[in-house]
Image (cartoon, rainbow, N blue to C red; front, side, top):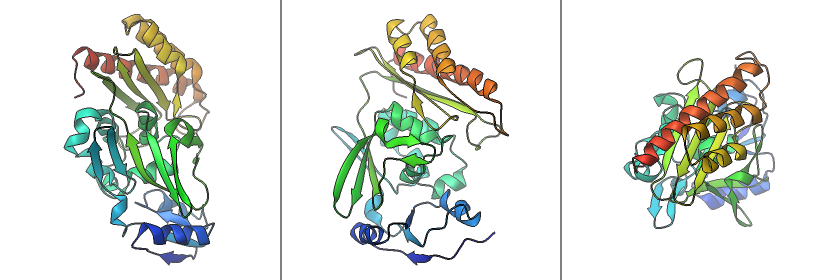
Length: 288
């Protein structure tokens, strides 16, 4: 397998990269390459130019402040997974990263690359929805901030426009004494999920986020499940109701990995596990 021919550019600054993307509407940015390179080799995409972002050091890094954390889009997934500061308030991200591929792929794959690709079975988009993330997007003409709820549009599609780059992700501090849960089932460790759920809960403010992924067109907040947890005061009955709401809401399709009926059923099972873990951690008043 060989990729189609393309022009290659490796700018050293963000401004140069944005200028290249502005001048070449069909160019594709290259981050970790864990998704783009296979697509090139299978000739699923035929971009006339690849703009390699790996020399732009300003696009990587993790900075924690009073209002939350900013994660550079080119931050390697493995670096985020091992970051002690993230483990304190954003442990859901750490938990989900352990399910993303393998150490070798996480050492090259980037946080922003996974989000911009938006594979419907990827874990990180679901986490961003559960954590109320905001995507900071740059182009040659300016900056936009896009809430995660608006960023992930559909299968392999985001709100990014031609010439725009996802440059960083902002995660606000979670509610006080929040608990988190992440559950996933896959055919083998490191495979894409057949179904997965990311959950954040807190009694303070009656906060609940329940996100299902691994099927359909991508991550989806299940509002009925969130309401069931809050209205049921995070009880066992509330967990059962939330799981049922997830199974009802998701719309998987049959594929070579699993039939739709199976995915619907296990989506509820994964949601119940994630909800139970989140509520247990909340009761212990820890964001471990």
